[in-house]
Length: 489
Image (cartoon, rainbow, N blue to C red; front, side, top):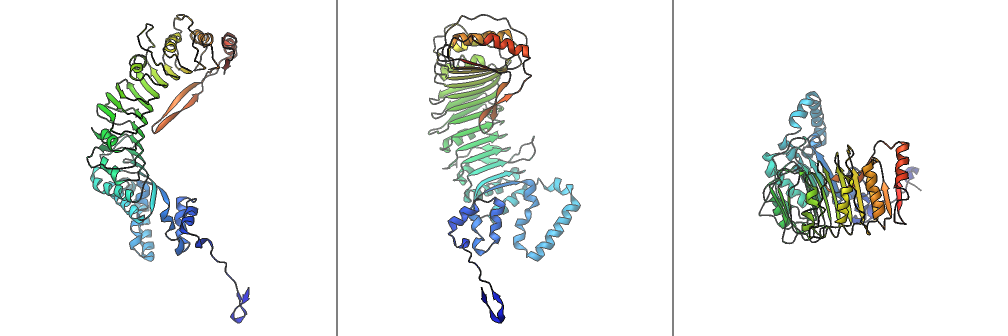
């Protein structure tokens, strides 16, 4: 500490060492902050003013936010003092008009697209990693919408989520043309909802890897256009969309590995020619014509079909996809009827895992023995029964040893005579069984509209003490495998 003129104390200020660090290090530090705090660092000094612009920002916008904060397009052209007056005036107008303004201007497509455009202009020179827009847009702003998409492409967007209507039940007539993929060369993930998808001959190189369509009106040729030009696409989800009668999933150099088609209207035929496809999930009320022209890598299938699924799974499917390793199907209202005669084919000869969810009121579980015979290499078998009604007539099945079956899971177990007989058959026929797990709870496969689902357990009324004792006494000690462990819970 030194004395200045007049004896005043002169304090030696410490140097601002952090501001002397290279830009790359400062940007790395800012990237650990939230988006809001990162932008606030621009107020520290001139050195920090523009550093936040180089961050890969994650932006979420909706109708309310855009029109509530539309001042970012006005404030730049008005002095701070005048801005305070204008802002105060607008706030008073807003409070007086209340809900009237909210209902009549909040969902105005032209005001919204202007706000989005202005928002993107202010971020020129920065990078936006993720951009999520949930706003009311329609066909009247198609040109301005495409301009905004081009702006996002220049900002290096990699993840884009667009929902073009705020209403849950309505959709928009906004058109998303496939050539817009080329306007965003860095885009890897796109989720498109509540608009129409149109094919285009102008589509060029892009980096898209994941595409999710939800409540989209898919025009004829749009899917084929995407698959032919998005050469890096690995995952495609089509959910609750209006589609052409025939969906053709094929391309000259298709890298697609996962395909999900869920609850789509109008689909009657699906043609698959995808040499790298590993997983296929299909959900519909009725079965459609599935054509597996060329799927040499397909290993897993998940089928949710209310009617007419069992005859297909153990009829046509083994012929089309004999190399399948994992199969999960859910059905209701279907009778379990599998032919006991020899068909001349090695049915599902490579299947290792089978999960069956049967929502039937009356069925003979011993009919599942015929399924086991058609899966000679099956190692894991999961069965969930739901809504079992009257006790069916039990037809005994001769014991056929299943040497590969290691694990058996039965969910929704009520302890009926039919269920007991099936469990006993498994214990006496699976000579290398390691574990049988019997539960009162049902295991349900919870689907995801953007990728693989997860298994969850649904609680049911527990067994009475007498019922649990009966189940335990009937099944314990019945396994022919010395290593088998029977778990009852």
